[in-house]
Amino acid sequence: MLKRPLVVDMRDAWPDIARDARLIKGSAKSLAERAIIAIQDRADLVVTVTYGFARTLRERGLKNVATVSNGVDIEHLEKLEPVPLEKNRLDVLYLGNHGESQRLEVPIRAAALVGEHKMTLTMVGHGVMRNELKELAATIDAPVQFHDPAYGRDVMEYYRGADSCIVALRDDWKSFETTVPSKTYEVLSVGRHITGMVRGEAKKILEDAEAGHVVPADPEALADLWRVLADDRAQLRVNGGGRLWVQHNADVYTLGQSYLSLLAEVVGGGPHR
Image: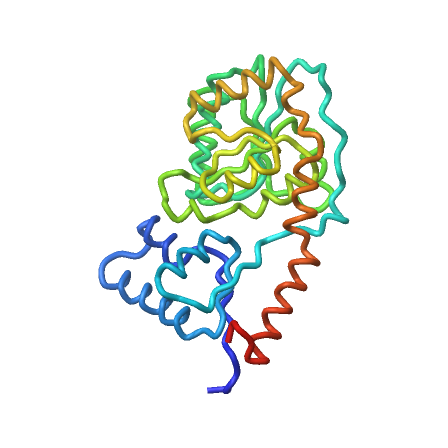
């Protein structure tokens, strides 16, 4: 109607996530999916935040697809000092949404298996599963502390006190093979060890950055990892590889310039038109 190019920015893998979560049922499912797909088909350019979802869209026949990942302003994120090698307890942090997408009951059960004599799990944030998770932690006597959402300097203080930070997405939704939690880049930048319960593209990022350990979403496997880290704290020192990876791949200013170039191509009738 406005005779202007349409750019669609897909911040998540829609409609795939809705299908995996069974958020859309019956006739509403068909209508919602058709609407989303129609918008993608109509667009002069579809921008995704992961390369995996861009590949998924191309496999469905879309040709006007490009990727500009999430990123961080690394200049405003302090690189923290390495964690101490001599410490009696492993402190693990989860900071983010307490929703259905993260399967946070797994780290709570793992913390209970490890026990309070070896570790503490701190969970910061809110979400639809928060009350249920608190009840679970109390029921199984897990060494878990819950805190309200944090912002600004408070976030850095939580990172400073952590030995390892959890990055998690449930592993039974296929759409999460092409999803990267945005917090990944922040934790990589501050230089903390990452406990990754992720798959696909997110797993590859952590492995390429040599920024921690990736384990299945299984309490026993996670507990085994945390016991090893508690006993051998040298494995918590990730030597700045994550921050270097972010500088090369997820710097927000570089990403912004990439996005600007894509928009200029669309307006000018370039290859993405």
